[in-house]
Length: 145
Image 1 (tube, rainbow, N blue to C red):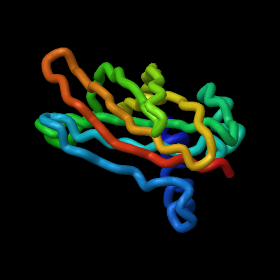
Image 2: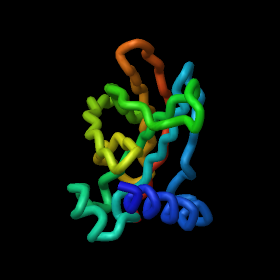
Image 3: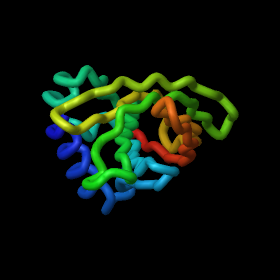
Image 4: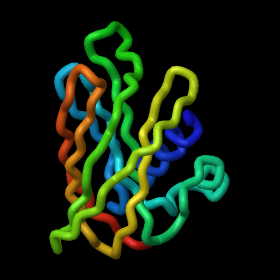
């Protein structure tokens, strides 16, 4: 998974100069440090997409979330449950289902989303570890490349 995260991070850095992807974001929510990004799936190489079962398409976005425990030294990855929706400007709502991927000490939560060119989605996610529940809200405009 480090391979996919490194690939996504590099792509986001490179793509940031052309505006077609946003840089990774982080929000502190209670005891969670939530790192999140949403990018077009075509930014992934075919090999990485295939190895993680990600559909590469001009109309497919990838949402990547990782949660770290900010109450413990070195902020280790935290296993959580993520549920939520994505709503576009027309009010159409899509339920999101995240897959947990573990690689060593790292834990990532991935989901995919179909979109049209220049479509903005508003994400409303609930992140829970069984003891604490937090809301993550963000928006992302997607472009067909």
